[in-house]
Image (cartoon, rainbow, N blue to C red; front, side):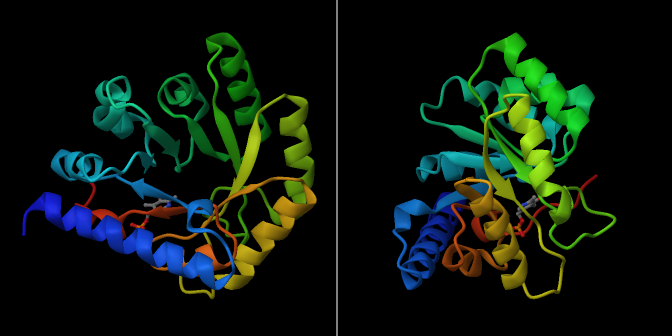
Length: 226
Ligand SMILES: *Cc1c(COP(=O)(O)O)cnc(C)c1O
């Protein structure tokens, strides 16, 4: 099977499964966007996804994302890039120049840097706040108990917070984490929910995700990081 065919088939499967899961909850297929996470993937696989009509992509490192997307950004109409990995303040300018959506706003200092950079560059960008729903020490994100205050802080800075994002603990049932994210969003009038990856995007779509972040399910296994 050619790479084009393989990726096109994978995308069709993921989109179909997402639509079916959303329908189980009475939600329209169009209410869930598949973000194809292209980190650590060879360029030909990314090209194949574009050929198959995929326009929304996620990356978790700014520098690697630049190699995949800087040149494509201006020549692919409708392309939408999401940063789904942690953002260091010294990379904010590069990130804002490249990504349409920053999903990982998680601390006041980063929020301040982003607000200043949006002002300076004058570009329309959207932000999600990452919530550490499992309160894991090694994971980024705002603790659930601090979420409301942090969202208020972001809004005071006039950051366009449109969504929340979470990565539940490995090997734990995901439903309570997705439900917690949804509750925090609802009480803060936030509409978008980025939750679910290759292993659990169907559960996420059924439980209210507006964005599922699927890497291996679209592209196949990743090459190990150098
Ligand atoms: C890598 C990554 C994904 C995709 O993971 P898969 O298991 O390959 O689907 C989703 N979200 C984040 C934040 C990631 O870093």
